[in-house]
Image (cartoon, rainbow, N blue to C red; front, top):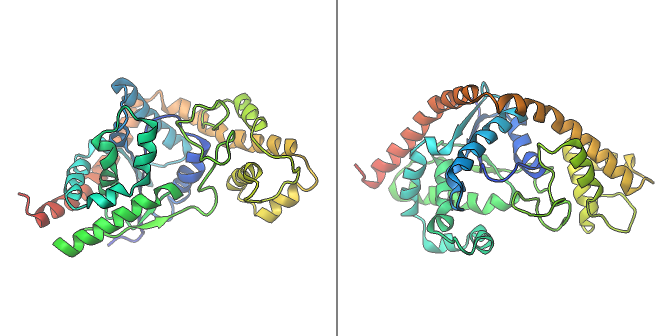
Length: 329
């Protein structure tokens, strides 16, 4: 019997990992390692819903493994593996495909968003990938899934298909709960605080990436959109300042009252300078560790192999149970 709740979460190896990814997901993963049994996955199969250069995708997959370890994912405390190396993900996704109504898939808002961004490659996988996401989660009989606000809809689909499958075929899947960070769950773009910070934005000052130089971080913070009020306070109606303060709070873990007191009667320039300093100090050890790990592929392969030895039996047992229940031989 498990003594700790089990968590699963995944991240795609496309684009550069930014501060929103770190504060909204990765930092929570690292902080939860003492409290949960963690299974973390680089979901490279999800990445190919958009056309990728094969060589580049392989390299980015390993780069992301190195970066996650550099951020503090401890292979002695957490399992970290590559999605495509566990065949049961795709196999279970097909079983789930056959048990998800088209209407449920049609309601997935991210399909519409991604189709608009990639109108020349609206493929079946893009429409269908919530089933693969559900398979990713359900394979490991997890208790909780750390998700951002934009992924809550997909987790609800996962829960619905699991409950329906258990009802129609027999007990197979644990029903997972959402785990949403209270602070830092939705970091917005520095150049447009009305839009979530994104890997895919082309804006030069949109996102701070984990491997940005100190000079780049300072420049991006200086150019961050604010307003003409001049008052530093947590006000949701003033998106630019609110976003900068959210980032500062997520990095320092100070209360809103303490932060507002710290910057009372101070200008936006002081806030931006102070914020850039704390970001630089947060990311400096990550960049240093990443430089060491990314050049040691044998170590990365060792970490991956160890994790696969632990997660494959869980995935296989779940898939075999689902396969048996639906009558496949």
